Image (cartoon, rainbow, N blue to C red; front, side):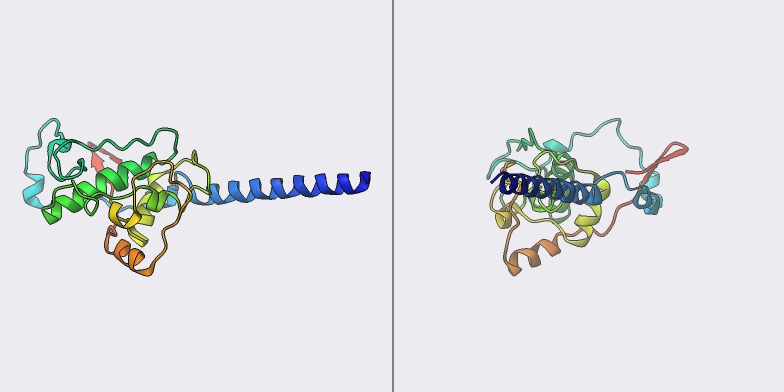
Length: 195
């Protein structure tokens, strides 16, 4: 009986250790500060017209119709990612991508078709851990390779929906339509800053 209990406990301990090790490797394999990626980013090259433009000290893009807004309204949609590690996906998918896509298409960001779900990508890298950290050196390549899914296709903007992967060829096909073409770094002053 004692041998069975010891064997059972040892088996449970090994399964827990293997699961933890796998989760750590998965998270470490997908996360963080990839210097090779940062070094590969080409510099942003401005057109002569853009280079000659005097820029304002600050700009508030949130007042533009392209920024994510509440359904069929003009109230700013504030995404609550409290308690999750999805901050990079919220900023790059929900705010940055949505604004740029809507601006280029001349669309208001106030419908499920013009807002984009951060968890449609975050769920692929978090290893089932709601607090798994995120990094733009992972987010941008995923956005380039796979694209982002609209709120309409993902089904919600719930921060606690961090485990699910969407299913359906048509949804992933539409997701691929929403890919970025690449990322660049911006030189600020004499020291290039990779953004």
